[in-house]
Length: 268
Image (tube, rainbow, N blue to C red; front, side):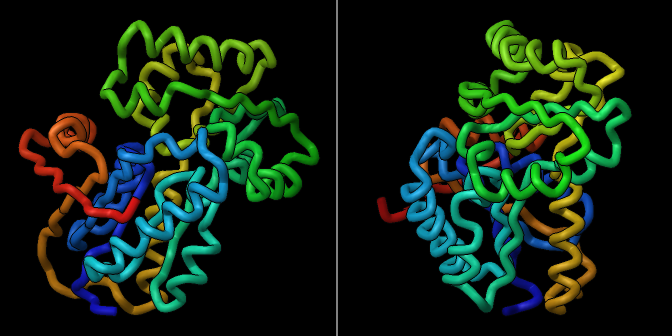
């Protein structure tokens, strides 16, 4: 692995940009390569076997670009196939993501935690283990949230449609009097302003972006592959979908006017 190679980051779509932003903040000198697997988005509605096969192909694409590490910036993909990606590429550090139940357990004041995520994430073994570890002495209320990923993919972050759907999922959790809300999908942080308006100031909102970024730093340090050059890192964006469509949303979420999304040729 070359120290000056890029860090590869992927998600089912643009949601992983929420993690990419945190990585950029902590590692300003690293080159970052991001892949939105938009042609197969959303992952959360597909069978585990299909997602697992797909993310192995996505990882192979990034490996082919010469990345020095891979960040699976997707809860569903991590649940479905993180171990398989690590097994397939044992020489490449692979960092995953999981819902922030551990910090939520430490922060809740009344012992009532809500989790908003995809159905597959909530049904996965990794999430069940988290509940066993950190849910014994608290109440964990889960809510699958179909449709939110698609709204973020369309750049609809503050529309009446988005607000209506968020109320549909959040209101039942608020009726349980949760004081801590875990965002179990990397798309959801882009909806935090609207989520905060609905939940109010008494509910703590947690996402895993910063934690994953810190873990990425630790892993690069442990493997001695931090980029040693004093420089400003570059970002390269790919999509398996339509670059023109994805380009507009990436520019909006990445907060840059000039973003060029390239086409990723990944075997179907």
